[in-house]
Image (cartoon, rainbow, N blue to C red; front, side, top):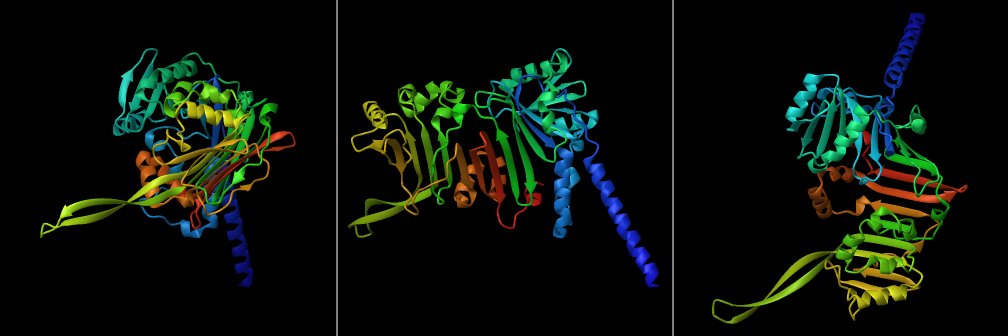
Length: 457
């Protein structure tokens, strides 16, 4: 009897192992990538290995039996990573690409339709407007979702362009579907068949001496991005930035990195209109070390006195207390001569005789120069002292846990997609120099008790 039990147990174990191997082979291999889905003028690509990502969630499910049962309203893993309900074929690799000389917020992706009826039904349900174009192209747009879809045969180009920007999308669709102007697949070979759930490719630019690769992995309660980047020599300078654990947001970088970039040169008129002074007069002094600390909102009680008559017609004094919430921050920037920059701002009447920066009406902002650093400060935090960090090229730290419910209500009110961030604790980016390369590392961590399965489903 014991012999049969032993044999039965071994057979069950063998079946489980073989079944597991079959499942993971089915979910992981084989994988194909259509290199003809990215235009030649792409300068950034986010390559999502759909099966790898699905396997990360499958493995996490196996480690968390409590997640095996979900209510009817929750999506399963297969449904989460499937486009089939919209009549679109779920790709092995989903490539999101960015095009040269376009806004950093504009991204595209190419997919294929496998069920025309289901696709048209999804378009109708999503209340997309439809427009027939020449050369066999069709245009669909949703103002509510701000999504533009361009269709040719069984291929579609999806983007987050507005209806006013559809000419950009049409041009991109023509280059891909009609002119067949594709990116050389050898450039992005390192983004395919990697152990990473997501891989980012960045084209050589003014910052990079060669194309850059950043790998993204998922680990239970963390999303980690890491890459070795061949930075241009003038962007390798390291600085000891300040740090403050009480800050909601901390940022440090060398202003010289962006001084000649389009974000500055292309918006000089807007900056002048907003800030009230000519930015070129500041750039002439070669600004360098730049730091920003944003603290939780500061609550201030303001008393308002009014007079009224009581029932006996006696003059009565009334005091009404209002609670105002004001921003609290510290911004500083070094230059060749920060005192001259300060004096220039005074001549432009943006700093008054009480050293108050007048162009920020939300809070009284003091301006001063210390150690050749021009600083602007409003409602300064006194909870902790700034301490110098280890040398870095730049960094960014966001402490979501320091946001109050009032802050989240305001943030989500502007964009509901930000609600996802409520489940995370902090986000940190560091760029350092290691072995003559720029070591990029970013980490997004969930709150205690939260896991990526629950958040991203």
